[in-house]
Image (cartoon, rainbow, N blue to C red; front, side, top):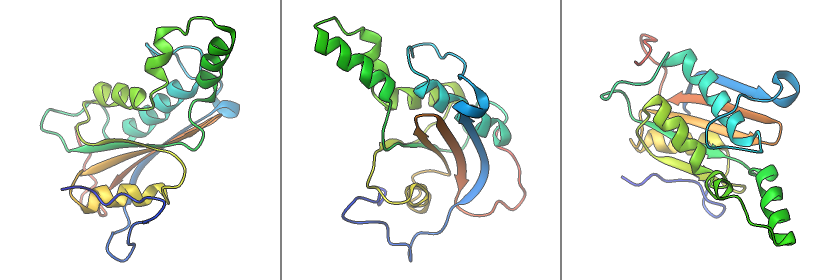
Length: 181
C-alpha cells in the first residue's frame, strides 16, 4: 500500500486520516545540552549526531532497547527545512577553493544516512523518509503512514541547526501501555 504523503500541492485529507497518538518524545538543543556525542561516520557537524541523540532519548522511553526481529514495523521520518548547513558549508568551501571534498561528507550529506544509522541500531524496519519544506505538518505524514498500514509506529524526527526532536507515534491510544521489545 502506498502512503498518501502530503505534498505542497496535495496536503493529506484530515477528515480521513486519524490523529496519531504520541508515545514518547526526545529532544536535543545546542544551548541546553552542548555538543552531541560523536557518531561513527559523521564528522565536522553536530547535525546528524543531534538527530541520533534525540532519537535515542525518545526510543529509550518506550522501546527500552533494540527491537526483536518480529517487533513492530517502525517508519522513520525526518523533516528538516534547512538540512545540515555545516556540512553544506564545508563542501561548498572545498569546491570553491578547488580542494578535494572528503569522501565521508558525501555519505553524511545524504539525510537518509543518519536514518539508516538509527534504524540499524534499534532494529527498526519500515519506510525511511526524508522531507524538506512544503510538506504540511510533520504529524500528518506520521498519521498517513499509520493510517495506510505502512507502519505500526512512526519515529518522527525534526532537525534544524541547534535543535533536533524525536517523537514516537502510534495509530491510537495503546490499551495497556506495554512497551515493545
